[in-house]
Image 1: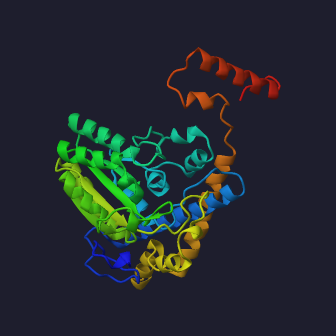
Image 2: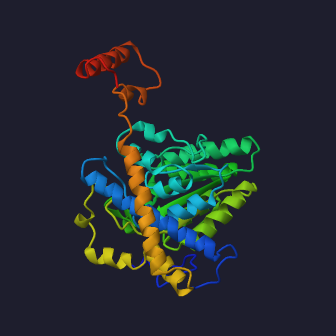
Image 3: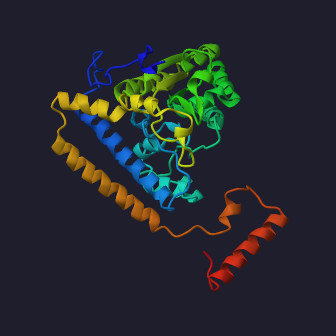
Length: 363
């Protein structure tokens, strides 16, 4: 089945042609800004994979093909809103002011990568990456409920993949959002594959957004390869949430153009033909075609911006590689809230061992 043929909200098709009148906000500056953002995060993604392949990064989850989802979410959120991400959300977090080097630090195995400040030096309101599947949805319910209790006109937004929608954590969170009428937006990046399990055997419903009906909230299906449709849907859903009009579930139809992570080999379970067909719908070339057709982007712009992106990414890599290593006892400090006597002794033993190995220097 060609998922792109399903009825969904869309403004720009895969050939860069308008299929509906653009929203009033979609001017030249905004759309070229979206394009620049998506190119930047794709170049970063390519570099991160190269770092993993050369042993400078741990297992890494590419966001290739999901750039429109991530950029739309990040740009639609206000600074005072709260973002609860899953593990494939670097584009949104970068837009929200979290440096690339923090993302590299996290996937390099350093938990300090989850302790971040925004670009203006303030503590981030957002939660760190969540790797366990769908547990971030329960956290989001708690955040949104707190915002409502405090009487704040703010919203929370949580993301997940299509596989997460089969988990009890997701369904229970959806139900709570409906019953409690909290300011929460769920965004499903339906990229058609939950590791090696295809969407076709995950759920019998035609749309994952249909799951919203059981919770009594609004469900939308949006072309996740169309950044205009994505931004418009997220923008309106967040506005509704802030006004106390309830939660929304947005299903973004995309495609995972990469392996699930760098520890995966997707060629073992999906065909090359399917992958090549999906490349025809990817978000960056789609928006570029539209911008070029309007005279808003040129090959000179492309070359200049690409060179700038590579420089920005390389500088982030240098900052990451220059960071001092975390202390060995961090393995205890980030795992336990408190330590009993046995764990204290193990922690002290590890510190002493590290000091002996480094000639009495710790860290």
